[in-house]
Image (tube, rainbow, N blue to C red; front, side):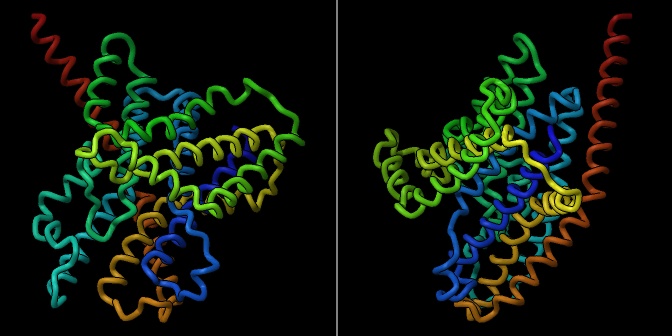
Length: 367
């Protein structure tokens, strides 16, 4: 992957996370109405951007680094859990402490009371499978991980396995996913196809740069004309199985349209002959590192803020709110850096030990 395009993806990744933060800040009335009216509410579009970008980056990493299935699985699990586990632990711990001092039970009090069930439930990313619609207490943004983790598993089986083992593995993964994840799988897998077909239809640099600008313009028009609301209503109205609610996939039609626009932008960026100074590349890497911590940290801060400081809604505490998000994001980043490396090495060591144990058993049985 060219350095300039990699930097572009880093910046887009962080911008998408910032848009999610802005969207949730407006939705939970953290900012004043006078400020909120000027802020974009593109949280869902940002998540779609994450999905397309994730598929592209995962396909690139699997091919360019010549990973084995074990290396791929360890890297993906370590990436997710290095932030998700500290976020889950802090969210449940803080919610338990808060519930003990609140006069009324929280909305997710049942999860706090049965944390020993819900912590492993969410750690296994089961919250969006089939008819489940559960997000961890104080971590509403966690829902998208319930999609992405299973898409990682799907790609791993598709890319690394062969023959009957691959068919059986894919069937089992798809069966576990359920209909909501099936519906959004094309959005994520479009990023994989973009990686594979990136050089299939070359275009001039000038046309590519024009295409890069066209995508955000069309997104602005889509938002201005409330396209999401229209397509969301259509999806719900024409969904043929009302007993199986769409839940977090109810914007699927809009997700497809936004996904196509993101694909257009990325494909054009690949051919736009971008150039970036060294300082911007370094900045992009730093921002990209903190993107995932920011995505979960802001959700925890918003939920805690609205539960503990309901009088602050309306924009009276915007500055301390921003400071809190920055501090929690930094904390998650500092914890995740060594934890990711430790988890990846531990998982690879465990896999090696299991392989050696399996070889020993086969040798013993063969005697």
